Image (cartoon, rainbow, N blue to C red; front, side, top):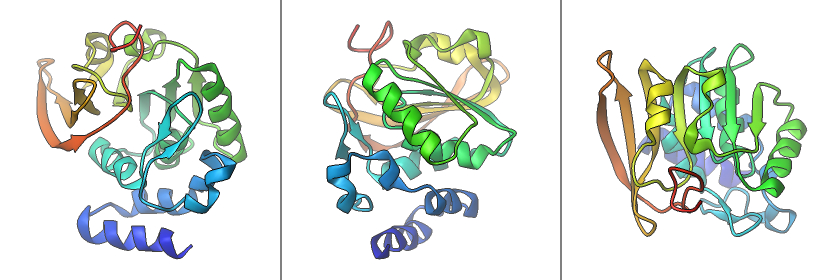
Length: 213
């Protein structure tokens, strides 16, 4: 676990993560959310392959997005792109038993993989839905925070409508080849105040408001 501790030490210095975020990373086993053949690389600070050409983000990317969300215990969060469930697990740990995470994924194999991984990690405050997350999930809205883990050309309008005033949305915005990580804070007037967190590269979002139908 030397590499895991090295990451924690690096983030303490460079990212100024809160204790609640560092605790989540320390207690959630990334090795439970990757393919068996990549177990040795669980704490390398790199993305790793998953199923159907998808990847699990590198740990630093996960924690940058987590920090930007400014999660608090008891919050309701919506996620697009469950993947293997790792970001969901980190988020769920921080919002705690009184919090709720609704996560969507369009690839059936990943839906099942994520559900298995979350169960293995004793996380029971996450609902994984196999559907187009770019439409949000109106039935369970509004949300305190929204996280998008796939590239989008802009934040989808349904998500902004389902975000509470004062809420935060975070995701990679740009084209299919390059994106900027954007944090939006929704004002009482419904407008977003935007913060730009640097360049990233994510696989394209699927769905009505994505790059791929």
